[in-house]
Length: 236
Ligand code: MF3
Ligand code: CO
Image (cartoon, rainbow, N blue to C red; front, side, top):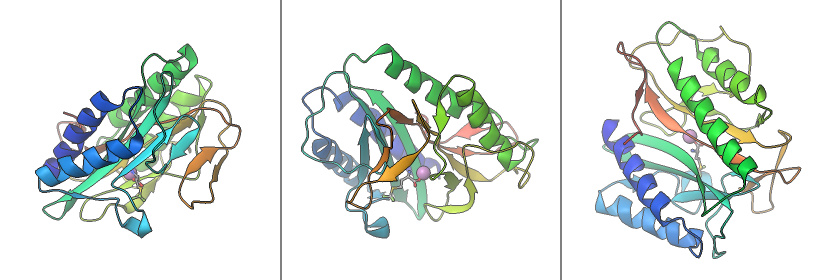
């Protein structure tokens, strides 16, 4: 799994450099496809449940599963990029939310808190914890800082399939669910809203947006449980 995860990390880093004002998300999608092909990796999302693109691009009030299009990125936007590949029969999956040029202070704060909540959750992805410790860590971290957790979409096990059991909500009480064991691999992915947690889906059947129009951020890593602590496979 290190190979697909490293490929995902490399490609997301490349995309992050290109996500500047004037760029379109469709061009980012094309770049993701091209870079995956260069590495002999297969995009994991394209064709998954009929999703038509390699990349999910969710700007501003879009939460997840936004579709690449010809709209031009503007200074002050935030943009969530979610990408996965298959290589050698194994999956890697990761997401980042990027600032496009200079962004407002409240947007910056949302990105920072969401990314920190992911790292707080990764810190408890160890054999002395249970599954829901991941969930409760994200919720505690973000709610105590005034943000809200999306309920309808969750993290997941990952390996020979993109979505394996268990589901990993970003909310709930600690101390429940399976004991974490060395060798387990999880995609941990907080989706965090600036205002209220409620979301809805656009008529395209994919794009998830906040109901109140507030901003939303998404950070995701594929993480292995090891005896030496959590190993972030999608980190460069
Ligand atoms: N990272 C998301 C997930 O883990 C991406 C799925 S998008 C889809 O669920 F297009 F593949 F559905
Ligand atoms: Co995922």
